[in-house]
Amino acid sequence: MRQIVPAEFNFLSAADRQVVSALQGVVRMMYGLESGQAVVVEGMSATWRATTTGSGASLRLTRQVTLAPGVVMWNGGLWEFGGATIEGLGWTQPLNGDGWVLVMSEQVAPPSPVYGAAIALDVSPHKRLVCTLASAEDAAEETQKVTLGNVMRIRTGGVSVPVSSLALEVAIRNETT
Image 1: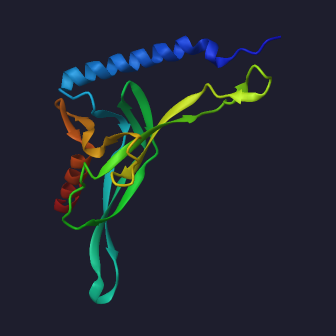
Image 2 (image 1 turned 135 degrees about the vertical axis):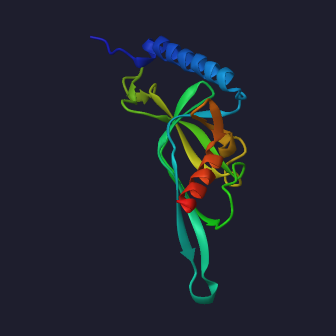
Image 3 (image 1 turned 135 degrees about the horizontal axis):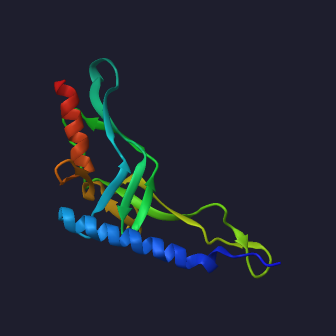
């Protein structure tokens, strides 16, 4: 009896990557997006909340923006975003799309590892693509990343808007209602 190694089915993963890459190309052409921009496929809605820091005379009104979990299409792959919160934004300060980045990484996913040639659990063919939010200052220079200003949400009417702008738009709408 022989174990089927998932790497033997890598043609399925390659086909999946080709489909995602082709779809990304179509979306990019339809909405006039550049190659370095990411597209929100699902989720990543923004909610704003007023917060306060300090006390007494040093009381300061601030805002907190929370990005919900979602999926982003970037660089021919679908990247899972687990959600994040940015705290301490000034009351009138917009969410700076260049000050925050999505850091992209590949992580080992179950059912890895599997048995390799040495009959040990030493082969990890299953990967998942994930992205996390970090400040542009904290993100390592060599990492794969895309600025939040280049993460685009396709809106009704075929308009693409950066997630960072959409978050500000939601905040303004919440203030006026």
